[in-house]
Image (cartoon, rainbow, N blue to C red; front, side):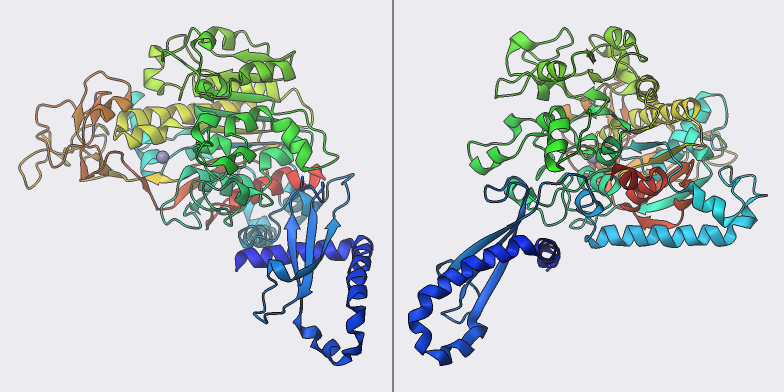
Amino acid sequence: MMNKFILSTITVSLVFALSACGDNGDNGTDGSNGINGSNGSNGTNGTNGNNALITQTPLPVGNENCLNGGVQIDSGIDTNADTVLDASEITSTQYVCSPAATSVNDSELLSSLNNPWFKQGAAEIETADDVWKKIDSQLVNNANVSIATASTAAEITALKGSAKNVILFVGDGMGISTVTAARILDGQNKGMMGEENQLSFDKFPFSGLAKTYNVDAQTPDSAGTMTAMMSGIKTDAGVLGVDENVVRGNCASTKGIEMITALELAEIAGKSTGVISTARITHATPAATYAKSADRDWEDISDMDIANNPERANCEDIALQLVNFEANLEARYTGVDVDGIEVVMGGGRRHFLPKDAAYNSNDAVSTIEGDRTDGRDLTAEWQAKYATSAYVYDQTSFNAIDTETTPHVFGLFNESHMQYEADRKNDIAGEPSLSEMTATAIKVLDNNNKGFFLMVESGRIDHAHHAGNAYNALNDAIEFAKAVQVAVDATSQEDTLIIVTADHSHVFTIAGYPKRGNPILGKVVGIGETEPSLASDDMPYTTLGYANGLGFRNLGAQTDADASYAAAAVTGRVDLTDVDTSTAGFHQESLVPLDSETHAGEDVGVFAVGPGAQLITGTNEQSLIFHVMDYAGNLSGTAQ
Ligand SMILES: [Zn+2]
């Protein structure tokens, strides 16, 4: 139903707008009537006009009959009276082609405008904006509301579009329990009891909750959730930058339903743009900022199994879309001229290099670092496009970036994901931390006086949870909070909107009745007690735990959480009496044995500061985040 609704809306508007072109097509129809002239004596048949059917099919940009897209109109007589115009019944086919665009208009940019999720988000912004205009005068004396120096409705109104810069921080898998536990661990690392500590974004004046489900999933994945945040529409799990009419794994199904992202709007608006992740830069969360894909797993061409699915040859793998970003965006919107993503930093070098040991870097972990089976070296292709820019892959070359004179930076610091923060010292050639990457990115991006859009993902909070290892999840969350503080310090809340959130949660719990200041990675010790509380099985238990996953491991000083995948899931309870549960290598027990701990379906927190931050309040669909960024940065308005 949804599909038909959207398609008919598009066709009606195109036919209406291009009636002159359509008239020419009509003349073609008259030609076929001429053939029927001999039947003219059957005048009574003329009343059977009801049997004439017309179907309209939208054509994507690039269609051989309409290079700029348009509509194919098939007409004919329903001779078998089944109310469907079968292929054999088509007597005339016309094409109503869109003209080449000379400027980008609203409906072209926001292909999502008719999407119900998108409309809901836009309406929610208007409502929230009205609320603030009504209660504005009450804000002046509220010390917590640092943004609200605005004291009149006019000043609230002026906040719209006043964010020159927009930064979106995503802690992948950083549910509420992860935020709380990281806050406590960070405080205890600083010598506090812990609970009273504040992470950088705990201090932000506005927060709300986001509902994370995907259109087809109660508990979501990162591809669908990040598409919601970046494009303002909810979609299916596992797909990137396309709406819910996509069929996962079907390349053709993405054509015509590509959704524009906040990063693309910022790029068209002339701002600088950046994407940073500690995961592979082709992984779901970063990829949703720049790629359109029927499957998040198509990170390079070797992942697409084109041999058995030849139609996928019509889609680009995600790494290729990143390197072709500028050309692809310009091809989608005729007349648009952009200069490419200025800062790209993360892991995932294997998806950019040929499967040939000759291309290995001195940071290689595998015998053959590259995965690509098409022989293309995309790092070389990127350098050919941006000759005055910097391609970096280790700490030394990262440190050497001249942030004032380098227009583009491409950093691929690991073959796969970057290291966990606690494990970073073990990287072969060295790699920067998330906060170091954030600092460098902002220094490069802020050279543009039109401002910038930056997305920063801590991708491995999620991975440590999947591995059932709270130590690494919390240490990566603490580093993430540090990166947020770097951004706060490097920008002004007068002109920079910073939003911090998660794409989804994990089945991670803070349990029992530990006393105040009890070590968060420790065993539960009750109020007034000095020895661990015992469960009904007479064994102690940890405060932190997982509802499912691989369960208990005692790997001592091991700082790579993924070491847990070497053994099968441990079921049932383990006697932890003599186990130090605070080490890097301790993995918490889990209830349901699974080969990987899972995401959780509850809401996640959204924290905001800067112009437009006041709209982050209440409980909303995750797709609202796009609309807040668009409101604050006037991204779609400036892009036109
Ligand atoms: Zn995950």
